Image (cartoon, rainbow, N blue to C red):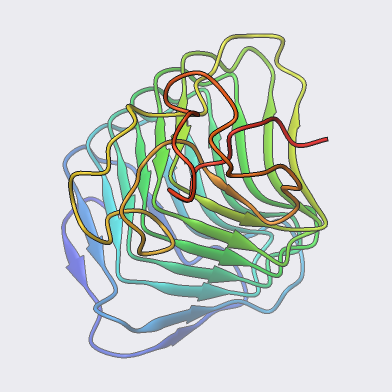
Length: 219
């Protein structure tokens, strides 16, 4: 793919469906589906060594990886439903400053989302659920911001990078319904296995009870 595409119908394929090889391309599925055959190492969409790619409004299912951002920077993956991958829902590998926002990633056999040796990416507003592993952070992945996501998986996160990544944003309750659960306060992520409390028994911003932000670490 080297030019903008808007789908007008659903697609079914036995291999990788789209490989984007030019900068500044938008793939808009416009709500249509891309369905693989759940065999091999195929991708629904692959961005390969490019910049400023947008992948949006897609329903991608039954691939090895639904979306692969490989050695690509400043891409936007937004408003997609990604399911039933045999390995990853989304993988960002050696790509920097990408934005993965407002996607649903579920029922992937290995990991819903993988960040590998990538820097400065933003992962927010995603629902990552019913995967064996929600988010895998590995290689030299660093300085990635991961906040306001809904994690509800067998294992929610595995971070083997040994690097600094950020799991919170600025505490803010100024906008009604702004977080991933449609509640008012932004902070970290929603963890389906969180067993702490919201009783205000902590230092700012964890001194506010019943704001939907956990005030003690999960154990």
